[in-house]
Length: 120
Image 1 (cartoon, one colour):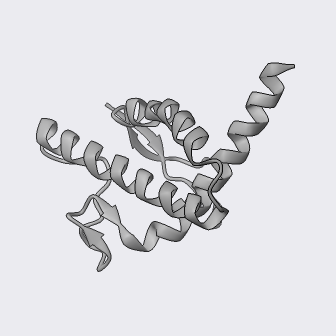
Image 2 (image 1 turned 90 degrees about the vertical axis):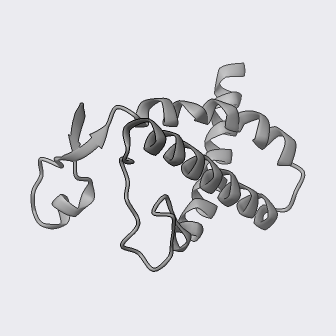
Image 3 (image 1 turned 45 degrees about the horizontal axis):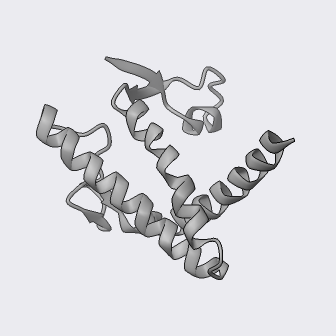
């Protein structure tokens, strides 16, 4: 089953519907984010650029392993990066490293904010 979602590319083209395609397989993958909290707590004392590199590795690992599992199960993956020169087995793109670096550090800020708000 597919979920329609093209993302922001359609917005740039003037299409305000923001339609596209995603897969139900993504829900359990996104659910793995619950396991990022203990990682954040363990690496909290490291300087920001080391934490960013750790997040990049963690996110690449999750993307690669879940991609392998889905490919072994259904024969294909929801994302296919094989057309990129920076692709590793079509499952991750090394040129996404800066984005994952920043996203990991933003996750930390979100985690700390939510924990502070939940404790109130």
